[in-house]
Length: 81
Image (tube, rainbow, N blue to C red; front, side, top):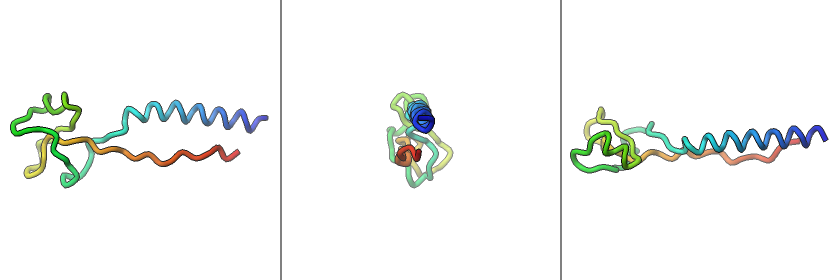
């Protein structure tokens, strides 16, 4: 019975953490070559962020307003108990 309680607790903890992680399913951290344009010529940082995109104008020759990169999460495993 104790193993079942630990397994249930672990599953509840994983669900709680996964709900927090869903808010961070994307990142703006990527190489400039990975950037996919999301803006238009002259787009401001505010306009870009209103579109749900990332803004970084420090790298010339690459999009400044670009789509965030999806974070792939590893598959969940069954409880080992």
